Image (cartoon, rainbow, N blue to C red):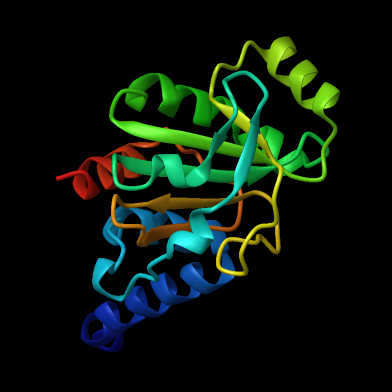
Length: 183
């Protein structure tokens, strides 16, 4: 019994560390709760050539990504109708868009997709988030290697956040992050 009293803190700490490594979603939850703000100082800054992407609008007028630089924070998402994880995060993106559409520019780029399939997906689900198909090559700094890939860009073109998996974009943590980077 004396042993338990003496080492109870070490035992709890050991169990905590085990849970973090044994259950990755616990680790993600802890990271999101305690470290929501990216290290802006070391963020990669995109240049004008990275932003020069002609975009064909699916539910909005055609544009160029460079049209969004220097105005607001940009929520940039690469996805496809063929990508199950991409479709999973769409409801939370729509909710975030509904909450932040005047404060953040949303640019969702469908990749390796047919225009008809994208338009059908948007109509069937009543999504109004601005969606485009890229008409020119993506730079290596933005080219996704997995889907979905989401970037949060500040007005100067710095990548504040890069997420390469499905996420609840309307979570309290995501909203606080976006609110903090806009200040």
